[in-house]
Amino acid sequence: MAPRKKNRVFVIGVGMTKFEKPGAQDNRDYPDMAKEAGQRALADARIPYSAIEQACVGYVYGDSTCGQRAIYHSLGLTGIPIINVNNNCSTGSTALFMARQLVQGGLADCVLALGFEKMERGSLSSKYMDRTNPMDKHMEVMINCYGMVAAPAAPQMFGNAGREHMEKYGTKPEHFAKIAWKNHKHSTNNPYSQFQDEYTLEQVMSSRKVFDFLTLLQCCPTSDGAGAAVLASKAFVRKHGLENQAVEIVAQEMVTDLASTFEENSCIKMVGYDMSWLAAKKCYEAAGLKPSDIDVVELHDCFSANELITYEALGLCPEGKAGELIDRGDNTYGGKFVVNPSGGLISKGHPLGATGLAQCAELCWQLRGQAGKRQVPGAKVALQHNIGLGGAVVVTLYRMGFPQQARPRVGTVLTSSSSGLEGLQSYPVFKEVEKRLQQEGEQLVKKIDGVFLLKVKDGPNGKERTWVIDLKNGKGSVTTDPGIKADCTLFMSDEDLLDMMTGKLNPQTAFFEGKLKFTGDAALVRKLLKLQVSLGKAKL
Image (cartoon, rainbow, N blue to C red; front, side, top):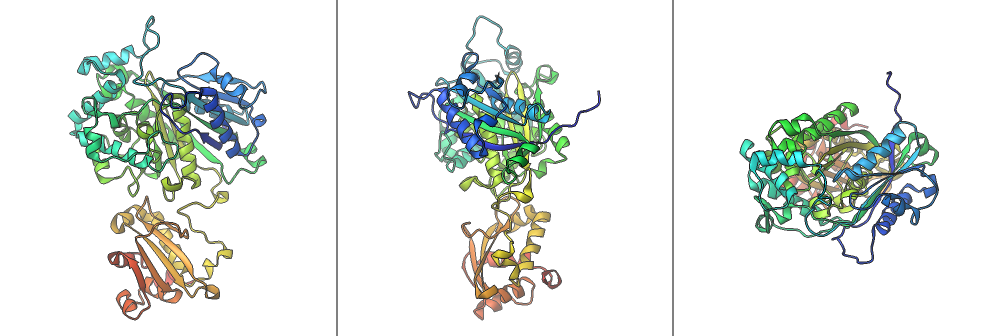
């Protein structure tokens, strides 16, 4: 059958509730959570519920048609198709996956993906003891490898995958603990996070043991919460003038268990490594991207062990090298990738049906430059990974759908003529620096590791202008945002700055002659000279 043309699909609105400990609010039920998340997503998309043509609703714990009850008396009664889905921990992204297919296939122009969960306290357990457990064959693999002890099943399964990684590649318990330490630290800046406490690495490792090396602070909690996303076609985006906020789903794949899950006697494979690897591979191929193109990642860290093995499955590092990635800091701000800036499941929480949509919301905020203190500078490509045992994994790649019409974002250069920046003699220097960052940003960040604030005097009409060169985070960026915290602030005239950055003026001479003043780290001033450009390139 000839392949059909597929429509582009955009996320035009996202919303979520704060994730909370189950029962934290006695009178708060799933319809209340769904209402809050859904209304926030619609408000973000700037459309009424009447514009929604279909809805895909995900939850794990609840009777049939909870999706209808969640929507009917909170968002609207318009008679649209409402499809309920359950795919264990990947339920939220399964709702997103179905919603995308509806738009991609031309069956609808605007679809709501909604996910929620009202959970019980404590570890997850089976609800139906009178029938075959859907994970009985997965458990057989684990028992054959390591046996079974008196501990909750989920931490045993993922913990044994971590044990296998340590035995096979020499990974240390500290590597898993560092992941949890990072995620708890990230969550301190997320107002939606269930936990916002920072811990030391020692506190993570010495917290109550759950299974083997996995301690309490390395395990995600159960949670109450909801998330939502509004998906639309290109025609719908254009009609409603939403280009400046539309985030495109450039690739998305769902993969279920393969033969290797059960036949290779591997706990790493049993918890979904090959599913994640194949889904990511298909996404990269469909989008024409590589793992090195990714800036920010929200992945399924139900336990620290799963985040570690997923680094390798997603191609963020070679197989067996996750420990080295962690030791280099390439999973947090200032490294190659920022993984789980939201705090991840470990600290943000894990209401099963909502998790995938909360991940989507975080990545949309990151790409729009709306993530506040969590913002990954210059984030352009985002990856989402959501997995459920039993099993299914959904991997999604995002980027701005209409970047030329997107809102100004942290990490971009604001160069409109009205700003007066183009009138600076030193303006071409900053443009050349921006080009270098695009080519070798990662290397320069590692060499320099600093944020520079440049106060440029004697600009057009005698006014002072501000530039920020961030060589500390991600792949570096050039911006005019004066709110960024700088390690070193330089004060120079426009002409003198041009001369210094093109090699005509020695910085030491400039300092003694009073042409250069600075506050902060003096060593960084010398490092800034690594960005000097040739005089020819700096000419207007």
